[in-house]
Length: 301
Image (cartoon, rainbow, N blue to C red; front, top):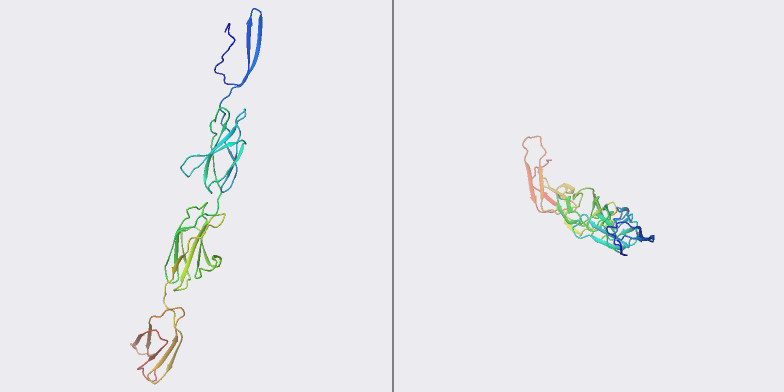
């Protein structure tokens, strides 16, 4: 405007050299001024994941800004958990490793830039998953019971902290719990939360512990439980012998079956004869290792 030496320009969006031209009856003069437009920074490029471990994610990104920025802000959040975003500030490079993460978990990550004016908009997000670890906790609610005199069934629930895909379970059992677990008997289970263990000794107490494993390794063992096997059907008496003591008596002797608690013995005997209807005799008596059979027919098998 004529007569003014102050010029206000509005709606200037770009940094550039601006020229001011003054005209009078004496002539024309020019002055050049460099104008720098300051604004919030632009959004950085979408983060690129370059490395993952069980507890960290490393990302890089393009600045997305022609002008220098003061620093970057990273915001990230687990996709499986509710709660606020976690923030990392004052990052002065375009590469950063986020640590302290949970194994085998999905995270969503954003980056924004900050300059002297303030914080700009977020980048597009990237979603990635951390790696696996061995389980951090043992299987839960381990229980055992007998299916038969020599077979038990063991069942459990998954660990609270699997830290990955559970590939299977190992069931350890022993009658000598003071021995190292490496000396216990082991039963592997691929894809189930229960299993049966057979060929157990009768009337023994077994200690049982269970662990879960991922592709990385074994987790901790569960607390021990005890399962007591039952008494089964007794085996045959051993060393069975017969000796005639008189014309009408025979002495029977034997050894008891191994590892069995005998409550009663039952004796069956009859005369060897081709006659139909030959009677069969039965005697039941307390656990001894001999019995005298009386009132037999002389000279008879």
